[in-house]
Image (cartoon, rainbow, N blue to C red; front, side, top):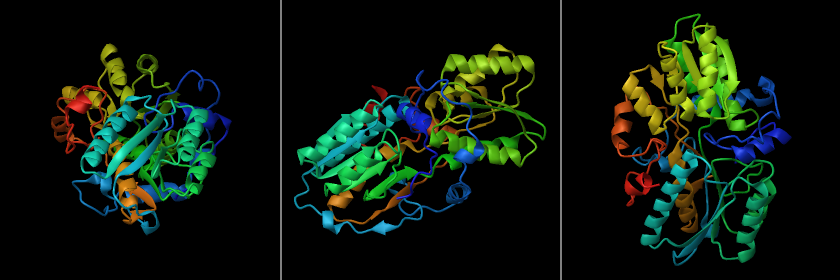
Length: 397
């Protein structure tokens, strides 16, 4: 398993408890505990270059099933975990469902489980929700281990360092462990599943702005909060790209992911002068940023959003120049399928790197059409269109 190279300080642990993955939101607890992090804390050149290279790699597997594709996989044997009978009990320790990205993924995972129950490959699926609390998730994992009932344990850690001992305990129990989304500082899990990563996400947006804007154009960077590795990696990648361009970054501001605060910050910058482009480390506040331009009667900027449906609809409506970086939500299907494969004795990638491709103007209409009945808080690349509950399970959240 690739170890997450986080400069995990006390703030990072606290912040990740509340945020963690790509679109998690901060809370007041994280506010004011840190200044902007230095580039050196969060930029690892080797990881940056590897992720940018992986964007162009051809994944192994069926393109119609991106949740089963893998980039440069190192396959491992799992015959020691093969279970006879197929009626497995799979246990899932979830960090939380505290934001729309995680809610969308959790809905997808449940529909995947229903399908596997129907086929007889899963008998029981036990779930614990840690509500973004490290101590609760540690207890949840210990309870799964102590029960002796789990044939496999899936873990989406709330934080990296603090959850590592609990993951090691799960591994020592002898049942196959699958970790996904956020990593930990051990490679004991049979498989660690994640999209390419934060550097690739940040670079997708920054490269787009450099390509679409004239030299000397002014870009405002909007960030959720400091101290979270996946978000800091995004900004670190963007800074590298802006540094080598003729783009002027007029400011980088923390927004807490709050729409009202985003509008206020953008409005203040527009009162001082023009802003030609907006870069965001998570685009679920992108609509609020665009509304600030509308309120100020200014031309829309070149925009970096995300694959949240509300932003995609605003993009189409306003005909702006935009891109939607993606932290593949369909990854929520993969851990359950991986657990079943392991219990069937099939090989799985040790580090299962899933594809991560942004939505562009060329395929915007396609993703809007696919998700035409979905609510604004849904994520376009959720990957559940072939599951039996589609579309009602995601519409009626």
